[in-house]
Image (cartoon, rainbow, N blue to C red; front, side, top):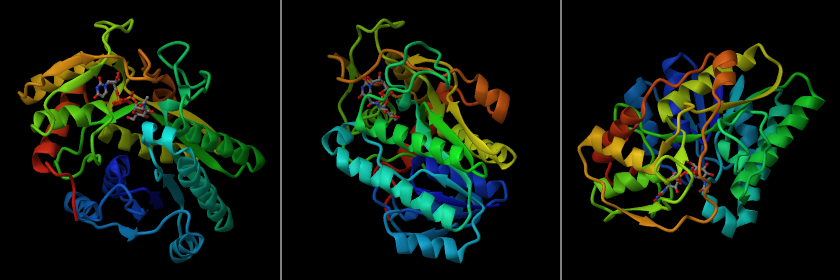
Amino acid sequence: MKVLVTGGTGFIGSHTCVELINNGHDVIIVDNLSNSSREVLNRIAKITGSIPKFYKDDLLDNEALDSIFEENKIDSVIHFAGYKAVGESVEKPLMYYQNNVIATLNLLDKMVKYNVKRLVFSSSATVYGDPDMVPIVETSRLQPTNPYGNTKLVIEDILRDVAYADHQWQIALLRYFNPIGAHSSGLIGETPNGIPNNLLPYIAQVATGKREELRVWGNDYPTIDGTGVRDYIHVVDLAVGHLKALKYIDNHPGIEAFNLGRGVGYSVLQVVQAFEKATGQKIPYQIMDRRPGDIATCFADTKKAKDLLNFEAIYDIEQMCSDLWNFYKNNPEGIKE
Ligand code: UD1
């Protein structure tokens, strides 16, 4: 199958391209490289033996999109491209709506124009906001708490309307929980710019000596040890989930949302412990006040993905930590050109 992957040089996108290529798909990447590097293409080639066709273009560029669809007989689209920093989205909401929502509308316009109606969309558990109960089922209330989350929900709503209006569409909305880890080769992984917001990139930078200690945002939540609990999932598992979703939509017209998580919650301190055990690195930490906007506990009900997609995450938290560490050791400055 010829698959257009938007944002294919990013963290989840690059791992998904590897799985696609390894499973015989023909991959075309479009990415504006705003938060990734061209070198990722070489890394994908090293892992798979094949370099994906690449367009350095922005989804806001209509002419560029026309060329991509004209030059390639695309069967399906996996749409990752978008901004994803919660704090930044609070400061620059218009930039987020422009880049995430308008860009998606452009992409959908072209998909209609070129009659490509299979889409896997990169959504997020962030659409659930502060959940009413855990584990979170797909039918839970959708109530994001920041502009980034709102853009994901707006796009989900657009796609629901599109699928309702035209029954030929085949769409999967994948709501990721907390993707971490890296490819076992150590060649691709996550390299955030600046000070990381997310837990695992921060821990990895403490381990490399780039940061002095981890700041744990609050230990007074109603959880096992008072620190926040999340559902961490290995990025390779997540990538495999996209292939399963592609397969599913192939013979299921309409639209369906799926949680992609492990269904297991780990507290911040449990993650620190797992990282220390998996890597032998000591992670000093200090307890701080709660981070505004954080929730206590979030983990997935994974039944729907298991029943309909036949998807089950296989890597445990220690594997996630050791693969992440392997990547960081090999790429202390990230993946540069
Ligand atoms: C965050 C985003 C979410 C996004 C996800 C991507 C917020 C409110 N939510 O989720 O929308 O989809 O990242 O992976 O930002 N922690 C520390 N110290 C740190 C960093 C994190 O103690 O330096 C704690 C947090 O308080 C939380 C846990 O670690 O309990 C996980 O945090 P993080 O990795 O930022 O993910 P989320 O908050 O779940």
